[in-house]
Length: 134
Image (cartoon, rainbow, N blue to C red; front, side):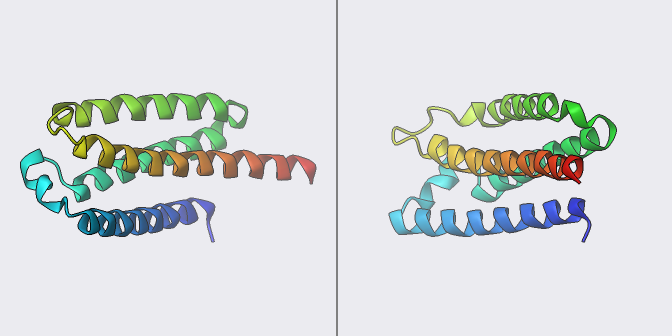
């Protein structure tokens, strides 16, 4: 199977599992009612995170194709742009609740997709090393 398609399918699986687990935790804690007051939704946060990670993944794959030695710079640039875009997205929701409901939920989503981006970069770099060894 094409590695590009594998990364996209893995992103969908990570997003679905993360969303399901976070929904279970929110329901278990009993804070699901706070979403109505926040102006955000968990689905919206996961959609934003998945699209941002998809853009980073496509960028990394494009750089791997065109300039494989620059993958680390592309990763750092992609993560930095993703962090700035994430701040712009969540800025209006900061400090709305005393219990930091929005901040904690967004951090969970952000770090989940950040780990995915690190995994993709690792796999791309690791694939380059295997190619060099052969």
